[in-house]
Length: 567
Image (tube, rainbow, N blue to C red; front, top):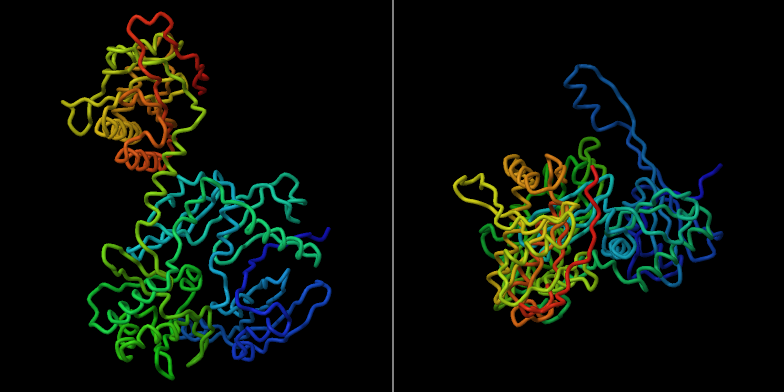
């Protein structure tokens, strides 16, 4: 049976007229002529479209000559790669789909850089992320995370207000695409960055319908709550600010190199960079400078030679071509980018700090407050998984914890039941106040200021790290639990926690809400949760009800039953 779908990478193009002639004119005619591309006009799609095909031939593979010198044996093998590019306009929006080397025929300037990522954050399952590419502001660093089987967002390590996510791969929620209709219960995956790599319908009507569905999702759906942080960091768009930054960068480019400008591979071209054997740089010159890799010193020198006010323009118009050697003086081009897109630097305007990345400016810290607030809102759920009784007036923390443990079968009070600190055995470490039958650690604190909460959050982080990293601490902790348990120890010998509950009684008996948490504590809560999530531990923050009078006859007790540990 013939397949109904094929995995393709689709790009959304901007500034391209949605007509067959307009789409063809938007392409690089010189590049099309170089490869002998043949244009076609498909009519079966029912929408304006252009289809180009060509072969990229090399009579002699680039490895032949050097290997003949190495072995003394002359061998000649040819190389032929194919390329196809389909441009089609659906409801006034132009899309490009390349086959084999066809993606190389799409000019970079036409691509909507966030198209694939916009779809991914709206449709990808946040608990089944398979990979991500992210860049850190001001560090000239790219991080690539791969989890083939899929993992929750925190374990991928991309949730950071100073990190720009460029690409996201994973399994999709159910959606009405052709691939979903024929999936037979199998998970559907996609990779979203500048382009969107996904299974699309092969039949003309199916392909057009899939593109309409993708467009609707990007336009109408809201991002997943766990992925919306990716949209929080956006390029600077204020014209006055951009003018100031560009003038400052132009001036900076006129100075002798001092290390303030670094470089990184543009986000969409890591594969081409890995495959390339030569880098061709052309800035304010008729010829190209040839090097094995990107040469920052050369680029800065060429920019410095441009007149003031024209240095940034020279980098925007200049190109860096990643290529493979073919024969003497000839190369096989893999990617052509703006020279500016390779540079990274930071510039301050007053108290504001901005960073250049992939040719765009970002302000540091713009998402910091929003990220902290969002993290606190997520942690303080309206339906807590654990309900604790009220804290009686005048009751000590130890007395309260014992009373809570006594009120529920299987709960253990470990308040003051400390273990030795492996860093300094004479010191003691408290792992938790209460232990639930399913291995959840509960830490309890009464707080009149942010200081006790900071101690609580630090304790949670230290407890988790010691249990995960120290066999001695694990052994001591499990031994104490075994001593206190009635019957078999509920924890395995290699126990590490999967969940931590932070239980807080605020001053003046306020109800625990995102607004009632101290500002400083909101930051430390967010930082703690992020650090523990990266270790595979979920965090929940719950409030303890207002205090009761000591002689209150009907003090409520916890009625939450937790499933026993399995295995």
